[in-house]
Length: 121
Image 1 (spheres, rainbow, N blue to C red):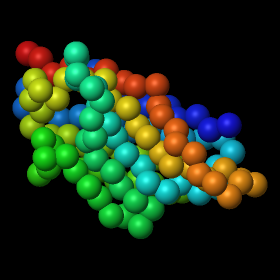
Image 2 (image 1 turned 90 degrees about the vertical axis):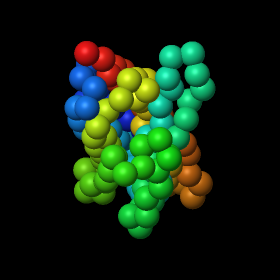
Image 3 (image 1 turned 60 degrees about the vertical axis):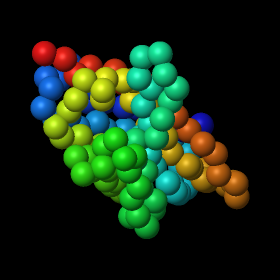
Image 4 (image 1 turned 180 degrees about the horizontal axis):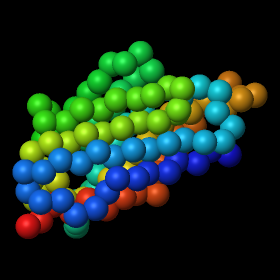
């Protein structure tokens, strides 16, 4: 099995920054796309950013220009840095990874448990 563990959430003042981390462990052969999604209160889960195993990135318009997604393949970890935080960034943030397990040909989609980010003064 594969587990994703997130860290780095919490209460942040408007205009501040945060860095989220998500580390995968378990029976991992290769991780393809890694990403971050978020679910604001009362709304559906939405894409924040993704990064392929080739390093190509994609950002939601709402965070473009003030966020950076990165990955450390040796550590099976993905990071999300968001600057100039706004109240609208308040949400539960989830990491997502497309994983090929050892001994398997197909890939599976895994999610972290979620970490709360609250932007408030």
